[in-house]
Amino acid sequence: MALVAGFVLAALNLRPAIAGISPLLDEIMDDVGLSPAGGGAITTVMMVCLGVFGAVAPLLARRVGLDRTLLAGLLVIAAGVSLRGLDGALVLYLGSALAATAIAVMNVAMPGVVKQHFPSRINLMTGIYVSAVVAGAATSSALVIPLEHLTGYGWRGVSVLLAVPALLGALLWLPQARRGRPGGQNGPRPIGAVLRSPVTWYVTGLMGLQSLTFYVMLAWLPTIFIEAGLPAEQAGYLLSLTNLVQVGTSLAVPLLAGRQPSQVPYVVGACVLTALGYLGMLLAPTTLPWVWMIVLGVGQGATFALSLLIIALRPANSATVTALSAVAQSVGYGVAALGPVLFGLLREVSGGWSAPLTAGLVVIAVQTVTGWHAGRPATLGR
Image 1 (cartoon, one colour):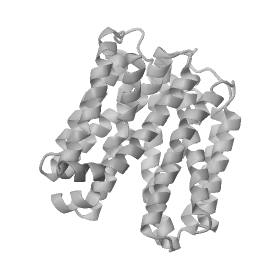
Image 2 (cartoon, one colour):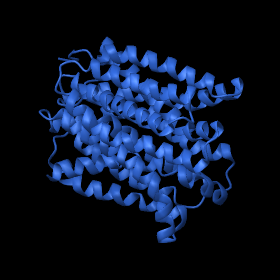
Image 3 (cartoon, one colour):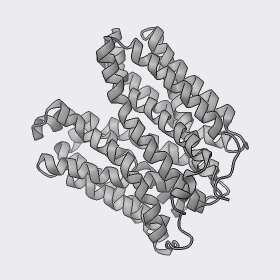
Image 4 (cartoon, rainbow, N blue to C red):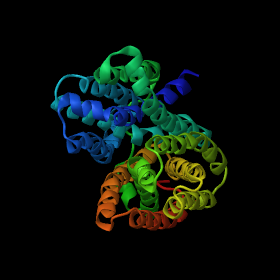
């Protein structure tokens, strides 16, 4: 029970350091004296770290083991969010980068932890893991402002408070890390060994493109609805709705898909639902917008969960899981970091949202093709 509790709490800490910035961004910019570009750079720095530093995880896991890598990640998250609560723009960026680096390493390590500790319950634990990640993002973005008002600490104090769940997770995971096996011969094989397999690139394509379509919506969805004529408050609720829908979907889909040798029908279905959400915003954004957001949330939540489930299922052992996870998530988040910027540039050039949303549908079509191949039965690194 302690193992499961520590695992879930670790997963809950994988998004608050990122998602908790957005609601406080205006206050942060005013306090620190940042321009809008400087404020946006906080998230950009974190996204770049997610893409770059995930590759460090296999090296750490091979040296000290997966369990101790996870413990270190939780401690570094706590240090990073505490650091950015200090005075000055430099520590704000450094603390954000430190927290994001730890998240990048943990993102890569978590599927390997699932394979190592729960080999007979990969589908269940992947569902719990992904649901916890999504719930952590939704909860933190919803609660940081009320927490600020309740405590009276301001954004700096709230940032430091985000260290508490990370420290609690570290405390729960400490016994496992102390008795967990160290690195060495049982550590992950080098990333280069998985790069030669086509399976790796299909999985990477699925992970990267679903991340791109998700972060595009996270960045621009309220603006799309506002410019279509909906009130800003309603646009914010629509974003919250599509994120909340993903929690339940992320839990249910791996339980169903993990029982089958092929995940192709689930991947294709999830991509179709994501495309329908995009199509609804393109053709009729103010007609039944709640329906479009529910459909989009089901599609995106399922695709994210399936990406991580496939990463855990395809390799033969936890070592290769970590190597595959490093490639898929490092490249994936690197691709995803470009999405919101390119989407915004296309909006600026075209003068509306039709061209960007159409481009999004093209990306989802390519995502479906990579997902088709990634979802087929295969074993990597036997």
